[in-house]
Image 1 (cartoon, rainbow, N blue to C red):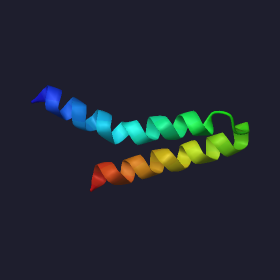
Image 2: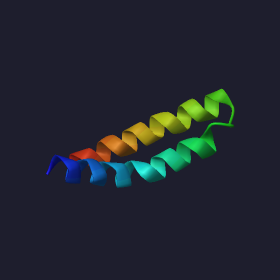
Image 3: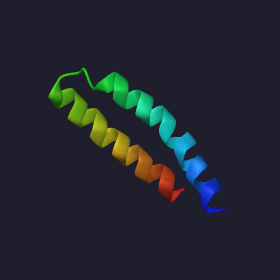
Amino acid sequence: MKQMRQSILFTKLKPWILLIQVIMPLRMTQRQFLFLGMIQMFHLQQHQ
């Protein structure tokens, strides 16, 4: 059961990981702004 939940979490995080790899080369201010947005999106998904 726990293994199942971990794999679901991983598939949810996979697009974020790709997004982070794209964001990394950006300027620091843009990166921080996008990162905060991502965190908010993640929290919204958790509450659904």
